[in-house]
Image 1 (cartoon, helix red, strand yellow):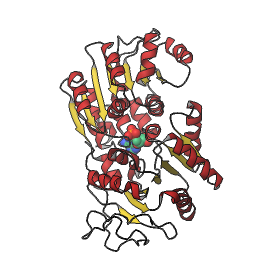
Image 2 (image 1 turned 60 degrees about the vertical axis):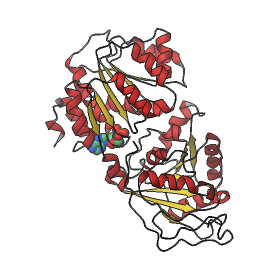
Image 3 (image 1 turned 90 degrees about the vertical axis):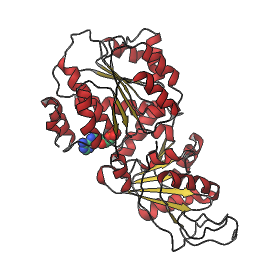
Image 4 (image 1 turned 180 degrees about the vertical axis):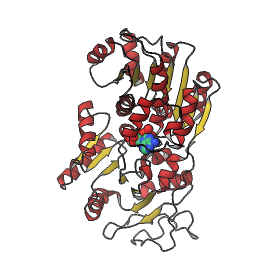
Length: 420
Ligand code: AMP
């Protein structure tokens, strides 16, 4: 079905065409009509599925039906876990609303930057506010925003907001909203906490679950390079240089690790920058822009900082360390292989991470291909056989040998189990 059949106004269809979207993604097909009708929404969807347009387009349509004068109240509140996601959602909303008349005003507020300029920007009246919960609460406490006219609330990446400890802030903010309103909740995973939150929040929600992310992930080739911990940096340089990777997103588990790796890559003449919570907003935005523009070859990020980053068609994602939570692995590899393009997700796995590797394979319901690179073989402990291998090697049974990748390893395409 084309976008034109979904009931969106012409100015929105024009913006969609300019964005280069020809057909709605599965989540858009389901979400747009439901949101247009004013329903609440419970959507299991991750970044990369087109969820932002899925909620932003119908919201803008509804907003533009009733125009306000100069002193317009905030009618749509979009809460996101991170500054980066807030900025991206704000950009998308502005882009999709570019041809609406009268123009709707969108503002973005988040922590880590001065609050005063944000207060000034809010003074002129805003239709759509995109915010991280903590900063918004600060603004409320300073009487810089009023939320008593909000018609639609969007909780984007709700699971991550809870992971980041925002539940209290969210509840405080919800208490300030009018009782009668539309609520849209997007989450990649559905823990008990999310269920608790949705119970009190959503009224007869339309439930949407999309596998679109999965079709993207099916295109992702996943490889685990078994190696020694001490050799990871050299192995990464080797992979980047020999394969001539030009745009690589590398995940580390700590901010400190991200900094250290970035310094080393730069020493090896591979232009790299780090983004994580300790960096100033300016540094993060600059690094991301440089990466998107191709000036920075490697972006080193922690999970939190990378969450929600939208970089179209990222060819390579590297797990310098496997994430502690298998669900984060699914989030990470979802950064590649977007929009039908093949991508590659590479993990550098040292022996202390073998159990984490198995947990990931359990979650995704598939084995990840193991490989070793000559000169960087895992010599510490025998590497783990994939789950399908008929005879698993016992760890430590040949600790001194450098095991070769065994011939019976199967590459199974990612059959993403829902991380739910
Ligand atoms: P999101 O899941 O909202 O982060 O969107 C992921 C990416 O898909 C963004 O780069 C969007 O610009 C893009 N996108 C959204 N909807 C469509 C569509 N219908 N066709 C092609 N690309 C889209």
